[in-house]
Length: 177
Image 1 (spheres, one colour):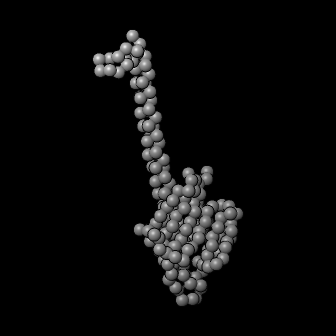
Image 2 (cartoon, rainbow, N blue to C red):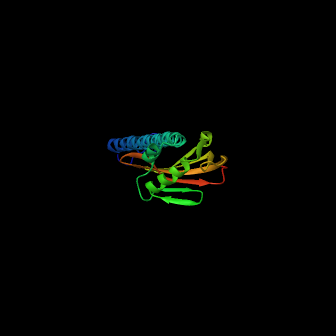
Image 3 (cartoon, rainbow, N blue to C red):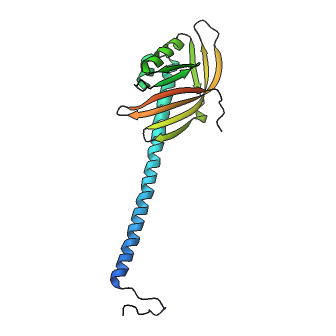
């Protein structure tokens, strides 16, 4: 009987409806498992991106401290939209940024980032933004070096060549909350 009651008072299910139920449950678990796996993979990709950006940033600081213009330039985004803002002056484009850094390198220019306060945020799959306090020791040629700590915000973009620095912006407030 199709609508007969089982011994515990529930309608009995046909064999095909039970099979559909079991297949549906199995598919549900399969889909949920896939979503969890993709979430872990996405998280792992973001962790990998942040690690790659952190490594590039560390190399960028080392290149700046050695005043290695060619290495610094190779890490900058090759675009007229690359932005370097420093001492109230905006430098747009890779060449303008390098020209500005060359001026700084003629004097004292040393960076000491506080990597314990390094923060990276993935904006998208191909854009990561970092914040890190950096102690700058700098002076014009022949001037007395001064040490100031600034919060640096950099934006990294990924293209067919890998990660590069698209913007460098100092912020006077160094307190990350």
